Length: 114
Image (cartoon, rainbow, N blue to C red; front, side, top):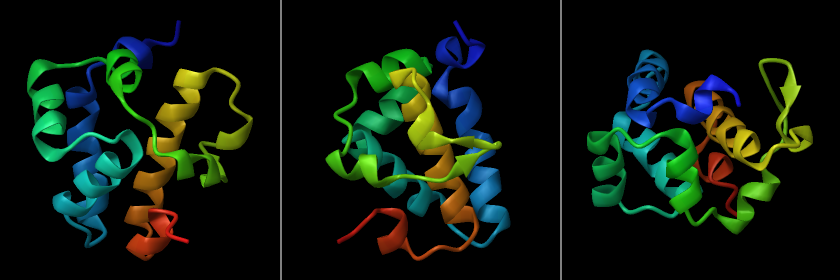
């Protein structure tokens, strides 16, 4: 089992915040992206961060956005749509959205608005 599965989301979250804020985006935008992907509201997201929920439990309890299947492209040289393990694919979806946010992509594009 990859170590990321048992890593607390709260341990990685500050790195996401740093990545997007360094590029002129906000923590609120990051939270919006995470809420869009997972179906959590802000209090639930904050509770998961405070409780040290692992990525495995975080995504196990999430109601993944049906439009998440539209997330394609590479993260660390791996095409997210080709990742076979469902949990790893969800983690890669999150990584991809954070990357797009940090690269300045318009929020409606990041959130796959049709």
